[in-house]
Length: 315
Image 1: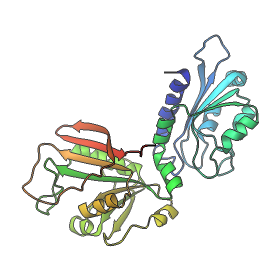
Image 2: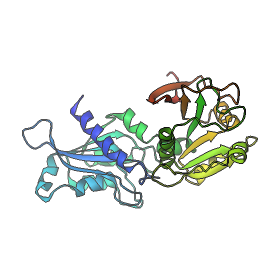
Image 3: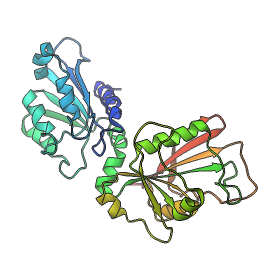
Image 4: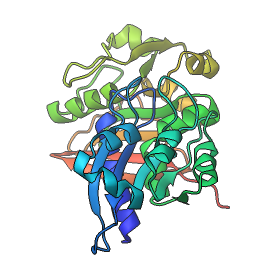
């Protein structure tokens, strides 16, 4: 692992602290490393992350954390930032201008910002000012962290997570009646996920039959927006985009989930299976799409949660 990669991974650690409060802005971390002494690895003299939408960006907080006695080290310093510094005036001034004014020698960027107001302009501004800029360090990890933000701006729809729980033999209920499949712990994990996403959706039949609360009872955070859709009607993605909903959990029922799969409207699928539970008959779980690729799994007692992402098309 290179020095640049090691410091970029630290940026990602910091960025994740903004998981809930940075929305709808992306999660970003930044560190400032001084290379003006004999140590080739450098020394961190400042760190920061984007704490809350409307407040200082990661770069601002990183510079603010530099001690007065270390200010002179900035002229030989490198700032690492997981996302391209902004170049436009929004709720805060451009971070690219701040970096230029601070006089750092080099900037290392994880990935380019796909937001229309940025898209390479921050990097261009830095290079035009004579600053050395390196782009693409831990790029895959940096893009993955803000996949909701990027999907929202690139595809003009929310990032969609399909989620269900099933028995070991592939049913989501018991002869049409609700069935407790999740454990208290995995239920808590489901509520944690809800706290991290903007909205949650079920079909009309599931809503009328089960009256799900769809809130965050077992975790800390804001409840996602509650949506109910009739399976006969296609969900209006432009409307969700217009309302600023960057991420959407779809929790059921089976026909609603299958409709999203059939229409290709999904980015991630999360399936919980109770390995020790079977039923004689019931509603079959949705059919996993052919382009679903396992990206992780975790066993919790006798329940396993498997995560799938869309397999990227071959170039």
